Structures are given as C-alpha cells and as structure tokens.
Amino acid sequence: MMSFGPEGGPRLLIIPPLFEELNRTRKLLSDLMRTLAGSDVATHLPDLPGTGESETLLSDVSWSDWRHAVRDAAQEADATAILAVRGGCLLDDTVQGIRHIRFSPVAGKRLIRDLIRARSLTDPDFDGDAQKSVFDEGSTNLGGYPIAADMARAVRDAELKSADDTITIRLESEHGDADVTIEGTPLWRRAEPSGSPELATRLADAIADRIR
Amino acid sequence: MATEAADKVEETLRAALVDVLGLDASEVAGFDGDTELFGAIPELDSMAVAGLLTEIEDRLDIWIEDDEFEAEMLETFGNLLAFAKEKALQ
Image (cartoon, rainbow over all chains, first blue to last red; front, side, top):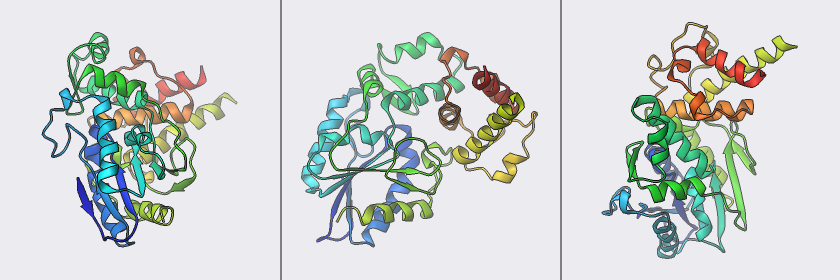
C-alpha cells in the first residue's frame, strides 16, 4: 500500500479504477495524493491483489479477494474516509461507517463491455464466440490483464451499491447523478496516459472539505 | 424537423469526440465526412473507441448491439455520423 501525507489529519483510503483504467489514471491519482497532502490529508492507495506490486497472479484472483483486500486496507490504514474512483466504486460498500466519496462511478457491465469492445477492435479473431467465452472459459486477455471467467462474470454483475453517507463527484461532461460536478476530461479514456494537474487540483478541492 | 434532429446528432457526436478524446473543439469542428478517425487520430486507440461508443450511447440514448458494430464505421467521421444518425433517428 502506498501512503502519502501528514499524520494527524483525515486518513483517506483510495480504491483505484480497475484494469486498463487503472494504468490510465495512475498519474492522476499520484497528483491527487500529493495535492491532498498539501491540505493535510493523508492518503493510502492499496494494490489490489494481482495488480501493481502484488505477487499474486491476476488470473488467480477472485472478486471476493478484491472486496476483502479493500476491507483489510481500510483497517490497516485506519481510514476515516474512502475515495473510490470509477470501477473502484463497485468495491467500496465493503467498508461502512465512514464517509464515502465516489468519483465517476461506473457499473461493472459497462466496464467489462468497454474492455471487450476495445479488444474486438484490434483482434479480428476475437469474434462473438470468443467474446462470450470471456465469461465461461479460461482467463482472457483484456486491456493487458488476464481476467478469469469468474472475475469477468463478477464484474459484469457488479452494481453500484448505495452506501450511507456517500458523495458522488462527476465530470461536467458526464451523465448520471452527482452531488458535485467538476470540469475536466476523462483521463481513463486517454491513449497516452497523461495527468492533468488542473483536474487533480479540482478533485482535491472537492474532496478535502468533505472529509473533515 | 428531421434536419434539426440530424443536426443535433452531429453536434452531439462532435462534442463526444472533444470530451472523450480531449481534442481541440476547433479541430473537431473542421471534421468532414472524409476525415479519417481510427488509425489516423493518435488519441483514438481501441480503449478510447470503446469509451467513445459508450459515451455516444449515453448521449444519444441508444444501445449499440455488439453485432451491429463494425470497424468500418470508425474509419471516417462520415461513417460514424451515418451510423449514429441511423440509430438515433430510426
């Protein structure tokens, strides 16, 4: 788990986006952590099993492993608030009793569909049958990650569960319910993973005052 | 009336390209039917295409079935627009 920022202030656990979107938002998250530290907020960013520094193979990881990992990370960090980003919002309901902030939450069905579509564009052999097998055969490479059939099904069926005390932040250009909207571009779509200091600052501002 | 609805689809499509890909609005305003998209615009890789399609579905309130989707429709702005109009105005 990567931790950053001062002691004595709020402790924010960050649940990152899933799969390919994770790679594309790394810079945003690290900029965000640095900016929040300037507002006396400490942040903790775990590697979900099978990603980042984790020694487990993603193809061996189940959805419930991820849910347990989030709960454990919240305990380890002694989190006073939780920020879930994109697909990470499908996991945040494992932690209750603290303020939840969701940034651009996305349903699992849409997430897995984007990954399948993305591969079908570049791989002519990834036809209808191959796409169906994502959910019932061995692990499939989607966006550079080997995703087991069990995991693919779990993500597909995962819905955003309402948690108590949740604030939803979205980009102005997005659709969907939001308590707060901020200006910015969806970096999780970007081919060239780049950050946006402006977006990190706006997001940090939207978060910092709501978790004290 | 039909023209107005068609203009709205085109406007929505251009706005989605700007927002999803972070392209310059003036650049996208200059796209015509022959402007090449997938393979010609570096920002538009396969993940971005998937996101773009989802965004278009959202904004036009349409649902694109997997078997309706062909790589050809992303070749040019004209092809994508024709597809979007057909779906949204049917």
